[in-house]
Length: 240
Image (cartoon, rainbow, N blue to C red):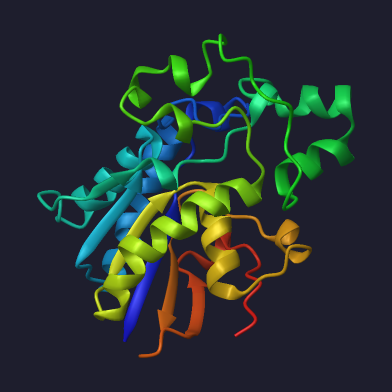
């Protein structure tokens, strides 16, 4: 049976501080490292094997994948890093505390920014130190591809073409894939795979460090999807 495993990186330092992170290249917290290792143990317990691995371009996802591979003893395997799988860009909210912004802008507006399909914060000033243009990690990405702010729709429009060109073709060959990415890039993938509507996508939340296994039939229709750690599972909006 063909399977795809999606995992949101373990808790990052800015997750711990409750900050909007987006494209800022923040590393894992100690808790996040533990979550990644536990994810590796869960994968071992299921006896899951993979042919290919992918991660975003951000070190919290990269290091989550490395810790998983270390735990599963596959650390010598190469994997592809793709900026297209990055977290969504939170614009002017980048680096700000989520609770403080709820008090300032209202909980309803912040929820809309975080979970809706097409809403996005105002653009981040390109001179801001947190703008991707000023982060060395992204110096080789064409500037035209670097956002100032993104909605989930914008994120979807870079994630899904990459998925179709790089990953879907491998799934068609019945290859088993693991992808380490972010809350919103995984929400984009789930929207596509589970055929979630623009309205319902706001109800989908992705927990950190909990592998989501998706099983397909030979026609790549979703048969089943579940989190390996049921105690930290979130509701999946699967319509298949």
